[in-house]
Length: 171
Ligand SMILES: [Fe+2]
Ligand SMILES: [Fe+2]
Image (cartoon, rainbow, N blue to C red; front, side):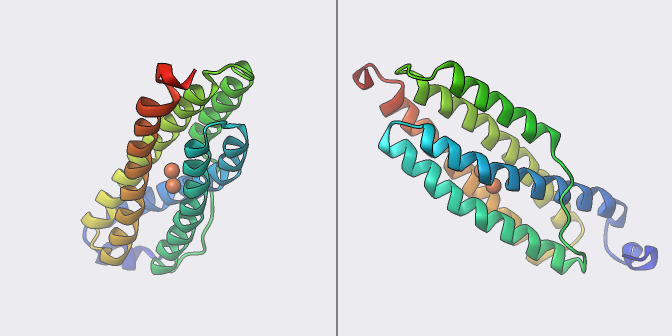
């Protein structure tokens, strides 16, 4: 976007940061898409497998929404490697490996997945705020939908952890 256009929008000074965060989010979601498939395979509890499968579908939609936001800005959707997500997913793999064959493995997978969801919630919370401040109403709505789904996934994982995977009856 040209500097003149950038200065036309409210809080245009946030534009570059907004775009940078969008690129980071696109990378994070793409990495997670692959990881969720693995987590689904690694989980033993059927409800947890289902939750990972559902969130895999939602994650595809999150990628689609980010591409729509890039489109609204007149930009090509570009990802920039999200190192935080790389780290979180490395830890998820490690924990999954370390607890392999252990009845507590599902709980370990949930712990790793919730760290991921909280990271995404922080990312989308920021993106929603920036979109709002710059008056990108359509983008704000799209990003808010994704934020709501990340929060809902986090709640669902807590529910599975408390009622199923971590409870004594699971063993
Ligand atoms: Fe997501
Ligand atoms: Fe997510």
